[in-house]
Image (cartoon, rainbow, N blue to C red):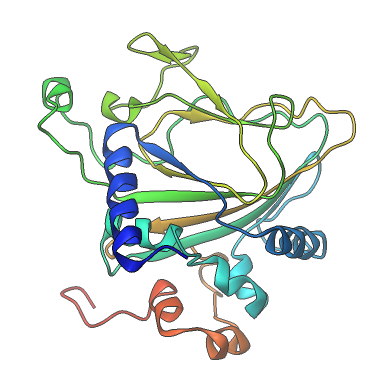
Length: 256
């Protein structure tokens, strides 16, 4: 276990990568045992509301289904980076589980959220540091090779200041690159980064993935079904103080 000082230095290095490249790959966030437990838990999920199944199985707000999911809201290494990027009062705006089966076709090049468009001259200034509003941690539960749905990213494309146009596959001459990694690794990316999914070209392998979406304090939490949403009492009872904050138990602020 790294010392607290080393952990702070490592988080600072990762934060700098987020500002420079828009993403960072965190190695060995989950143990092999955790990977196996998560895969088994995803296999037991059943769709409701906006969940769907087919070539891809997609399950929303899984943290509210069982206390089992709570430790994956703030895994070590990930939560420190989330708080450094978004503030110590950041919170979770979603936790989604995925199974992408053979034949699955991933999303085209896109960004997740752009808070505002800024002048290109400002974004091109190396002295300007674009604040982050939303970040996502993708926890991989398989060894990801070129055939098993690698995530594609364009480094530094968060400084484009716009979403990619139809048919675009590069930014400033830099093409999308596939991130190959091992089960237990995590990709942490900011919402303005241009990224894409890819195909599952394997004949018999399913990609398992858990995502956690983090937002600044003033970014709305995305818990569906919205009008009938309620927290499961057994989940709240099992939360640590940090997890309760991540689920929305904040100190009083200006708009509360």
